Length: 246
Image 1 (cartoon, one colour):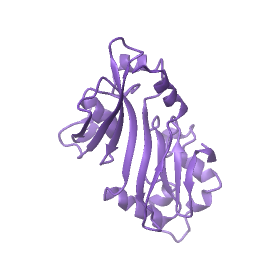
Image 2: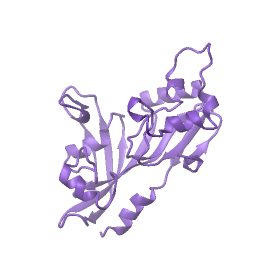
Image 3: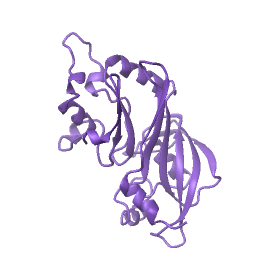
Image 4: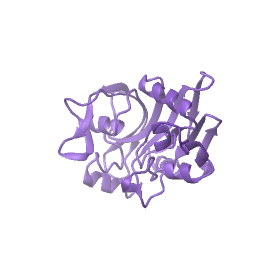
């Protein structure tokens, strides 16, 4: 992580393009890895996240202003608040579903119809706490999608791949990955949800899963105006698309 990852910055918000392989928030399990939170707390922006002695405990300081998360292997846009007021404002926008997000994914198979939505509850699997699934008693989850292109798989003969735009209307953990698995179109390279053999073959071509947080829009916490930011596909994802045949 460095300032080349910064897409936009002002006195209230910081928008970054997170690389794949970087964890967002630090935890006991990330002691030997540099996270986005470490980058914020150890760099020139650390002054924003030093809690005044009179300040009540707040997620703003414990999370270094990071408003939301994306998976370690997912690349793309992340919003970071630079003061407590902006943090609370943006958190409320996420809760009230005022934040609009668009992801790009490469999925197995030919997805039909070419536009649709997946509305199925998502919850943590009781028999495997690292995975999530569509399950009764899970939290409401809605993902809309649109097909962008179809390709011939270079990995498995006779298989198609589909490039999708995805619009999650809720923010459940692993939501897009779980929803695409549910409709039998798991994400290319997804070790958790595409199956061991399939993901192992995929990773001969791409050493991560193909999911990118491409666009986000929200109301600026200071001006109240809706703003939109976009990040380009990382080179390793673009290289895969360039190598595929329609």
